Length: 247
Image (tube, rainbow, N blue to C red; front, side, top):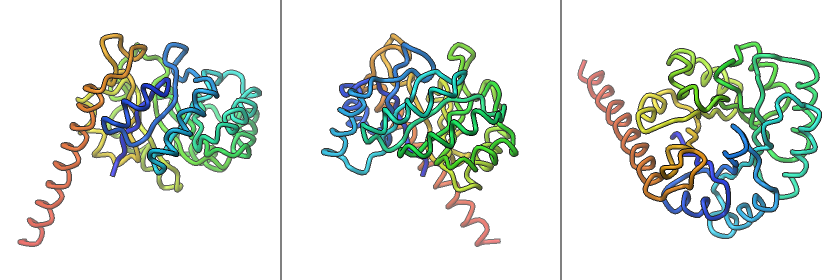
């Protein structure tokens, strides 16, 4: 079943998101970029709190918008490793498979946390590129938008392109996530693709948009829409099976 990832900037937002139904807490500071980094001390606070209250909830943290500087990536991952956060997200333009970046990602994978590559929908990786990144030792890949003013993920990529991405990533035994200015209208069509998780930020916030504050009511709305869509999909599969049984 596809999980609900909520991007939060601090412990207060993480508490709101978890209480309202998020399955995965992702630490990100939206005011400093598409993948703005949260201070390691705050990441550690969230990791320690989650360990005490809900030990099986995944938690991740981003290293910041540094895809043009591969050399800094291992050090940033190593700093987050000190917080014991289990997953670290690194944004890259994955369509460009460059040796320096491949080496940097391999070094990041050796730092301890499980690495999730955030690929950008504006220039997504093809099958060969996904295979090359998978060989570095990463744990997962997700497709997100770099430009938060260019529209949602589904406005940039077609359903077929998104389905192919999910299939290519999961075929290699990797976690696969989809995100990028998602709203309630995106939930049903994206759940049908079978990604491991859908990521939200702006849709969880108050009137301030993705740079605003996470709202309990907004998180609850997304949770309810995901549950409703899951139920509808399960019902459709049941009806389809019953129809085949009567044929």
